[in-house]
Length: 198
Ligand code: FE2
Image (cartoon, rainbow, N blue to C red; front, side, top):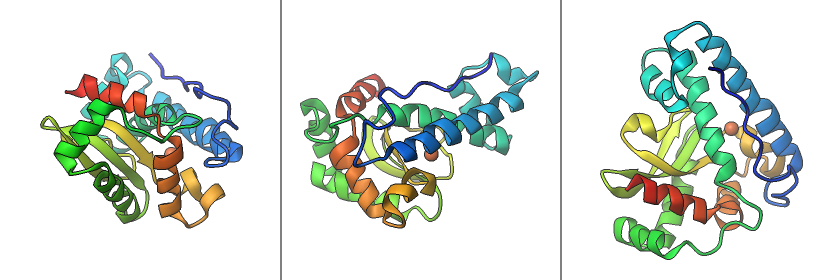
């Protein structure tokens, strides 16, 4: 089996002004496509060809760095497009909000912690909301690592690689993460993943 690039769930210009058409043309059409092309080359003729993407990510972690990096980035980006929508941000669905308040303290603290995790990730990586041991936690990971390899299920992730924001925000990573939370996040999808994770 080979993996293929999923379509964006909206047109390339749908997230303007918070994420430009040019960013999505590079990020989805070129960066994500490159991860998938590399992944398909690496799995060709190996045991991994018959596995699901999640199985490749978890199984290759710590064993084959090039395979893991490309598989995990394929998985992360496949979610990432769906974690955003035009007119996103806004109110968090009630049941998810309740659990955020119970596990993290408040939605404001979750927002502050999420932004701090993304800003504090030195170099490339991701900041996350994930479910670990039944609780919602804020995490950050380096490069392409998914929370899956740290015993947690991702329910929201923000790509803080420069390729995700440099065209639109230059060096202003904090402004990009705040815009992501306030104007782009598809909270209904986050809620759906949260319900599956618990
Ligand atoms: Fe990316």
